[in-house]
Image (cartoon, rainbow over all chains, first blue to last red):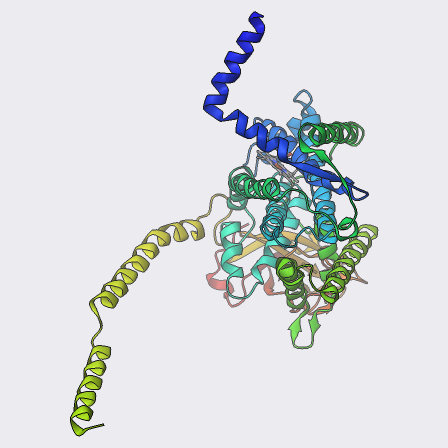
Length: 357
Length: 176
Ligand code: HEM
Ligand code: FES
């Protein structure tokens, strides 16, 4: 009796302040279609879980990490070998970053092939692309922080590629580098970008992305459009299933972390030669491998420039696709599918090729 | 149309022309405001742009025009080694006939640091496999589009002295 009364009172108090009733109503309205492609609806949620892990472990790493070139590498060594479970936290951050990017690739290509970008979901698609760029930024800036050999040269090459962009490239590269060479200024800037700027951008983009998803509900792929599909409640049914998937993947992550703790290369020496077998992280490897096999010159142009122009065009195609393939023209649909398949195929081929070398 | 009408029409047209030439108060104010706004924005952006592009040395070596690498006998013919030239990585190689060649070790492709590998591969870049001729610095294989930038080498009293091209040895402050 008493408990019931107290519960009502607390609920009433909260309801008046947070409009709980309205929220409940909204949550109750959202449903998720159940069909043979439903599994792909879990991908975005998986990325959210990894993101939460990144924020928590990233905050923990900051307690011991020192963003100074003569101390950075040593501080990671300390985290790995002296701090209790430091290796665990750090490996979780590194593995989490990689699995998150993997989840994002799956998310991107499945929403692409299910045509979830079509009107009215253009903004969802575009913010998603923005999020991928932000996460690539996390990967690129985070990679330098341990200040080991591969990190140093990966940054050098990455910024040199950026500097080749016509007109603005040199200025952008100089701002990111903080001068002409990869140095303390670069490490400071990358650290600030990694722990301050990108998290801000990420939160903003994610807010819009999720808001759009709530507003539009889940899309239905063409193949199940005309069938009568069952709908299940988003809350609590789908959320609970989501949590089960999270639990499963969290355990997978913990297994990776425990059995394959993340390594650390020798400390960077800015005056030594690049070590043999140097490679960027796997998610940049496809592009890297592609640039590597281009000849020095293609016609009058440097091979690099042709490659980068091609990447820019592919990126642009992903940006305009929701405005071009709107689900009304079967020929365009076919082209969109072909384009997506070719890009995915090339991405896999070049990535694997890069790994084998 | 009567001639009266015509005259009036002409007068009206002249009026329109005048109006078109004289900028209206609204347009004038808008343009002025726009100019001020643009000026204000640039004034606000400029300090931050300069702050971000400012090139201060936070740590590391200062400008150097030449370095001494010790005795010539320390580098056997047919080998090479990387060394620090001021704030830049550099590379020295010795031909089998005993002559020295020194280069800015920055790969002309995407800026990795090159190394002398062996007689067969010559100067090699680990990043994308670019190759250069050890005695000329010319790009001979892989993606690099240009030869390596050269440094001067002299052997003074048995010591290898590497210097920026164009700096005459007499006024070089040789640091060891
Ligand atoms: C607010 C969120 C984040 C914070 C506070 C944070 C913080 C940090 C810190 C302090 C380090 C240096 C320690 C180390 O290298 O192990 C680091 C490294 C790294 N971070 Fe994050 N991070 C965040 C989010 C992310 C995200 C979303 C990604 C996703 C791709 C990411 C990817 C990386 C990578 C790849 C490294 C290098 C790991 C290594 O090689 O050790 N971080 N992060
Ligand atoms: S940076 Fe040397 S070959 Fe690309």
